[in-house]
Image (cartoon, rainbow, N blue to C red):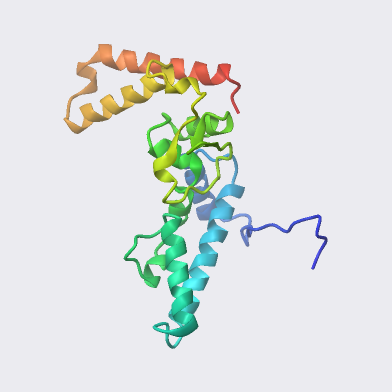
Length: 217
């Protein structure tokens, strides 16, 4: 049973510590998602492994069209849908195609970046830790908080945050990135607009300075 005061780890570490391919993949995921350490990746992999194990067990059952098997299958699909991992018309086989990236993309840090509330993944983590982000009326300061499908539309800057001002340096940098993306979509050479490129660069530098003044992580 173990000592109640000391909780057991809820994730599994790699079975072999020195595998080049796995290490390269984890380093790439860490950089792409702006993670602090590999532990966050191992937690996502363990969570995905549990979902896959349950799906494979249900697929191997003789009958899941009625009784307990049907209820368990429906509960699993509904749970993963509400967490944002699968679509409403997904089947058990779709769970097996999920990847670690799908789990990591549901973290609050990633959702803040995807919603356009930060310029980069690392900046998204800083905003969360510094209490600049809330879900509904609740401030959330945990970058790994799993954002459900219902909470996506409630993700915003905290009402007391200076980032609600459109003239804030970070907001300007975000808007500058959007405009640069629009230029790329229209196949306009950024070099042809040096003044605009310099303005975006200055806004990005100002946003980094604003974050440092608030105390970077």
